[in-house]
Length: 576
View (cartoon, rainbow, N blue to C red):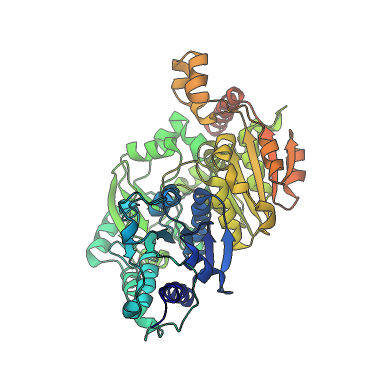
């Protein structure tokens, strides 16, 4: 009989072997003692790229970024106690954003539970309903070795969508380890007989996404045939090119989220300045569609979403998973299928006679709006936040990633970034938080091996400054553009800004941090540049990372710049 330490080592090596067989390529590990058996098993596999993070919260968001970039789960490991709690925010984001992660938490054995043992908490179902599956793996015993591979297979499948609702997401494996924690690996259990059988659950789910029921076909045709259609292209498209082909066939405009992959240049169907355009009351009233066809997640713009909800047009939503985001509760029909399926159906069943004036009214307004935005930003004496967003989006090289922080950066990109091709755009919009943004961008860069740009505000940067730890040694090209307006810039756009006396507003909402953010970056060994003009920003963006590019802006002036842009767009489209 082999020793308990050998059994534990063999158990961990078996889990890792099965995950590697299923295509897992990344492991994110936090230092700790109780997690030793799994940490060693991960380090022993040359097929895995091993990433060490000192901070558990940072590690979890890096694993999230890896999952976003690769559509495959990273293994995420920590020791027991509050270390496991630090994963929770990223687990919640992964749940809402449908990003796969294999969350492994080390735990004390049963005899150390509920007796006051150090670094011990109740870790069972720690993340509640935010995981697709929870496994409380007991202390490994040889007599149970025949189920070890099944544990790994089942958790991997659950993270990849082989569950009741078919959505990708995090799974939690709680691993109870008894000392001694270091042992030699014995012979692994035999591989599972049929790899095809392992994926049968997920394949059956995929099969369901390859067709539309006859009843839903009839309802779709009744809602959309020979109507003025407006397409919303949101995050989560599996084939942006096919969506634009659908737009061409229907002869309708596409309100294109940068994250959708459809905000490409040189396409008359693509509309990007919709937020500014729809702030004009006359334009908004005259441009109501007869049916809304939304692909993926909603846009960020509150103006656009409120207009869509109020215009009275029925909304058809097409998603790749059964999860429906519909806070306004206006969806009349929800289809779960691939883009190719809906495209084929539209080609056969919806041979509309496109209303050319419908597309032209949107396309002409888009052209006028882009010209107005350029004019509004052309005479700036100091670089503004819309100008920064527009410039970063334009100046990034092809085949690169852009990660956008929540709060104002994602709004400025959605509202002001002009169409272009060659980018992959990401953001944490599952729960829309500003925590873990730096680390998610790090994970994105690690998994994609592409130049990655991060547009982030100062508070989000402070929230996750630990994401900078060892950044210089990770061999990634991450260029961080930091907008530093010394506080919460988005609150200046809310009613609180005018309803409260300025001192009280600043204390509660403006929340100036008075921190030298460039000094923080330099403390982590990053090249740091401060820029004040678009020319300086352009030059700084050309330098390979990791680096920090800091731009100082003024929150009050930022509000005035947004107002000026929107006013100039309104004047331009009224004169078109």
